[in-house]
Amino acid sequence: MDGNSGPVVGHTKLEILKQHRPAFLDPSKLPWTPWVMEGTNFKLLNIDKKTGGFTILLKVDPGLDTPVHGHLGGVEGIVLKGEFGYDDDRGGEGCYFYEDAATRHKPDSPSGTIMFATVYGPIVGYDDEGGVAGIVDARLMYDLAAANGAADHLAHLADFPS
Image (cartoon, rainbow, N blue to C red; front, side):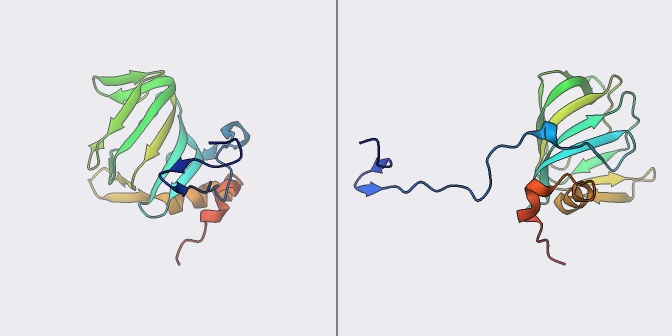
């Protein structure tokens, strides 16, 4: 293969296909956006309109008393700062976490945390009686970030159906 041609598989030359947007984003240039619970803020990195999922940096203030919530899709991420967990299942800086779809739990973070998380479907928040208090999906996340001037990098995905 010479330096001017693309990779060759069998007898077919593959064309290089570029994305329609940059692959890299510096999240330090995004402002923190207040989230659905007081004491939580996020930076929206990406959304998936097909699943309602999203990728965020999430910041949780120390000692926040979070309500019970559930996941309609799995969640995975890495704790970047601080720690959080569920009773005796806890993780600190550098820990990877995975939460199954259909999980319902009440996390806590006595010292606060910042985490990177990919949420593969909507999150359901419950009230004290077990009823649905709210649903957090890609559209809500986009709308919150856009209202805070923090979603310009996702404008190409903003054509949600009415």
